[in-house]
Image 1: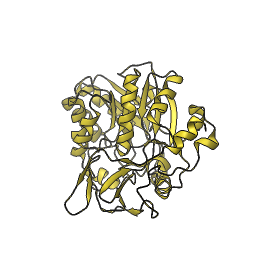
Image 2 (image 1 turned 30 degrees about the vertical axis):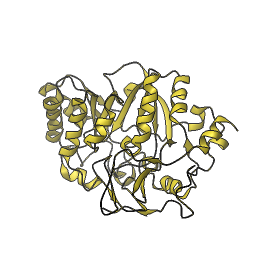
Image 3 (image 1 turned 45 degrees about the horizontal axis):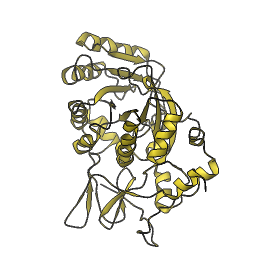
Length: 354
């Protein structure tokens, strides 16, 4: 049996790192600020964590949806190890439902996560050890967790970070920052860089993509990450009619200046129509440059406009098997949890509803 085939056989649900078992038999997840309270058989809003008889498990541990090798500047990160390359990877599941998402099948990942729950997934499984070895083989200097919110597979992120540090690789966490302080504390010392979205300063904007989210919750998480000693860079994807008010963009710059400092980098990216926002136009360059000028007037020193770049998109990535140098037929064998604790009923599929 090849090493890849052996790895596939080792796929197993992992206990959710941050969970609270409650007196009524439910369990609360503390990875993100949804803080889902789940009964036996329920899966959280992200769809990647399931309650099995009072214990939460991560379905997507080690499951890779997409992989690529890029300059760190494409994350976008400009002020940490410039000129180096990262291996970018993501899994399935997200705690947001952005209506203009370019990584829809990855970030929402409902079909893929249903397949994992059914024991029918053929997505790639890669152990933390093999992932780091792959990064070293490709000669990159870091590993970036991206394409969907990394908090939803934090268990894998932390295990990869531990091995990456031992191998001398840095780590990048591309986030919407709707994450708990508890999760950020676990990331302290494990993650070197957080690149976080500030999507808007409007609660209504966040309400439209995540019912419990408020602007201040996101801003507090970003500021907490910096207080924990993590290098922070922020990004705003400017969407026509949604978050393109120049005064609001100026206020984002002011918040960065006041709370993260004059040297804190702000990346202004262009919106490209997708999914439920396909009817909107591409962001006019003029708005982006007006935001840039406002930020410079406030005193931000490191402001970057990306007139040709939107999100960290995975749609044009090469197949994962090519990066792993693996036989696709072996890599994409059906994944069934190696443990036998679920019994014949398997993992129940009741979806969480807040």
